[in-house]
Length: 342
Image (cartoon, rainbow, N blue to C red):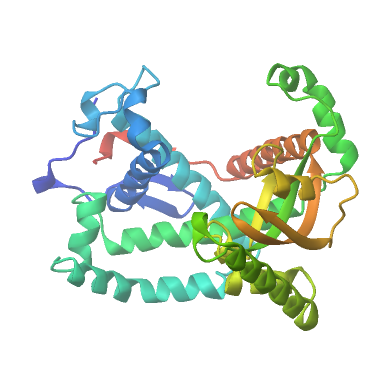
């Protein structure tokens, strides 16, 4: 059935889920629910319609891609799972003495005032009005704040816990061998093919596609000057990243210190790739490469075998799910669907 509320009789304080002493009310549920909707739309954009989602129609009046539930029920299930996961991690984080990192704490402390400023600039009477516009008539600023607090605290704890799970090269190879047939069916086999991580600083010639020889020569001179400045001041990866933020004219990587991760053969232009995938390339190598974009000051960060990195990532997902399941078993959740209103 439908969970759509009659807004003149919305029961915001009704408790829809309980985990120990933690309770989720209808008011707080609105944020979790609409964040699932927005995350789906952000992920798939115009392709959402290919899954049968028509955002112009009520979500409780159309069937989801699952085929057995409406889109409203689909997003509700995702919202309740999200609250359960966040809340379980928060219980563990608090038991372990975790507190929010300073940057998150400051962000949350300043958020009410920032929301109020944004609301005023957009013509809303208050931050509450703006939140209700995005998260439904029953949503509140406090509910949104609670959502973010649980997310940040749970995210910190979960991330730290995964980093402490031991994974060896032997574990990764064993995982790959156990799933070799699945990987082969998807075109992945144990070869010497690699991904590389590289930083670069792009110096483009003035004039762009119509640059003269003199302009290209000036760009080359600038590239050498920048590389020499890096070698003189702070000739390591951190120093290179700072230089990239200052000098690089590549809009796709400058703000990230010139970093491109998991570059595969065929992704970049040929001279760039020839330098990166040179068999003799090792961490810390640097140089200047010319492409049709300009002069690239290169810094080689490292490389990984494609099969090994893929297996490692899949293994960590599996271990992460196992860890999450073990936490959820310690913190059972009771849900009362009869009082849910959206």
